[in-house]
Every structure is written in structure tokens, then in C-alpha cells.
Image (spheres, rainbow, N blue to C red):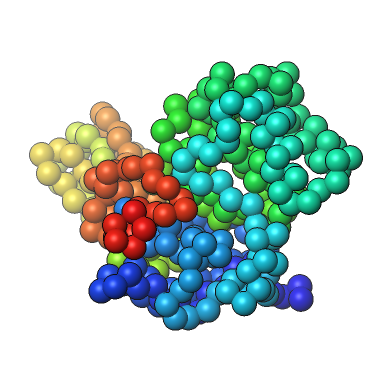
Length: 336
């Protein structure tokens, strides 16, 4: 069973009447992987997650979590997963400890086991001293950390997070990132993350899939995705070159340089990696007595890759909190 994937789907299709939300999705997550799922609203992210968490039946195709079929063995699947939905679902009128205790009871944990696990989780998320305070008094970041802890009460093998830092301020978002990195590094937890924040996927994920119009259109490491597009890092240099010296010819043959052009004293060089390419560019120009007055670099980002594959920035999509249990892309007559 060691070679069984944490998640595997084959030709997964979901239709809502005439609307095809998923169009034959094939993905595979290995154990211990931190996997990011990126896509605009309506791309099929939440529909896919609702199928994986047994909340929605696929129209056709199959999916397994740790070898268990999500339809035929849904009870086993539910014990293997912890889920953090977009919207905050902890009870604001209970304390953090009470929220965690109720969840442990849902999974049938004995009192001693619940107490030990809750104490451990509260310490891990930094809420020991606030554990007896009502969740209504917590900040947004504290509530999200509590949501993560609640999903871990029953010690799942797979943690699924649907836009876990949506709406948080940068400091709170960073604290959630740090918590997720610790979970991944220290406990070999498999994590599936959906996010609108490209920097979040770059910071956390070992593999990233881009989904659009119900199809997986690209999947690779972040660096692999960057290499798959034609664009590269760009370096702009304001120059003063001696007569008879062509800066474009000087740098174009250097290793890692993909293109170069000169306009009104501004040399623009496209390179695979600006950090590795700059020293060689500087040295080549220095040997030709070219004076460099100003340097500016632009790095290829995951946002650039997303635009390349989908044709639009993810920020152009209105980011909305939706019910994980119903979803954003489900037609009203099918449940909204």
C-alpha cells in the first residue's frame, strides 16, 4: 500500500444540468506532498474538493484517497481527511477548547485522547493562553489557526484547505503559512490547498496544478511551470556605450540570455535567471567599456504563468467567500 497515492482521480466529470463543472480531471498527489490547486472562480476547484471530501457525487469518473474509493468507501475517506473551508465555521459562542472538544467527540475520540490532542494542538497554534476565551473575541488570523487545529483533532492523513487565508491581513496570513509549513515539515502531512494568492502557492507548494473551465491545463513544480512558458526574467540596463560598440551583440551570445534589444539607451535582456545572468552581463559590458547607469530586474512570477495559461490575472476574478458545502459554481436550482 506504500505506493498508493494520497489522492488519485481518473477522468472525473461533474455536470449540473447543461453545465459541465469538471471535464475529465486527472490528478495524482503523492503522500507527504503539498499540492496547490489554482484557478479563477468557476474553474471547478470547489466542485473537485467537494467530490474528494464525499460531499458531492461525480457524474462519471473515479477518485480515491489513500486507495479508498470516495463513493464506495466514503466513511473510510471521511476519517482520513481534515477540511478547512473558506468560510469560518467554528462556533463563535464557544471557547477554542470547546470547539475542538466537540469535533473530537464527532470522531468518537475517548476523553483522555481528546484532552491530550487538544492540549497539543492549542500549543502548536499558539492559543494556549486564549483557549478558554470565546472565539468571538478572536482576530481573523486566530480563528483561521483554530480552524486548522480543529481539522487535525482526529489525526487525519490528508488536510484539505479551501482558500484558508482569504481576507486575512498580511501578518495573519504569514502566521498561517508558518503553521502549514510546520505541519508539512514536521508531520509529513499531505496537504491540498486552493488559493487565489500566487505568492501563497509559491511559498508553500511542492506541486501546483492550474485548473480552468473544468480542466487541468498545467501541473508541475513552481519552477517547472515557469520554465514551461516562453517568458523569462527581464533585466533593463540604462547604458552609455562607446562609439562602435553594440551592447546587444555583446550580451546576446552569453549563456542563459534568450533575447536582447536596445532602444534609446535602454538595453532590455531576457534571461532564464536574472541572479545568475547579471554578473556575466556586467562583465561582458565592462570589457567593452560600456558604462551602466541604472539596472532594473523583473522576475517571472507564478502570476505570469497563470496569465499565460488562463489568459487573465487571478486578481481580475472577484474573490468571494462561499459555502464550502454548496460551492460558488453550482447553479441556484442545484443547491444555492
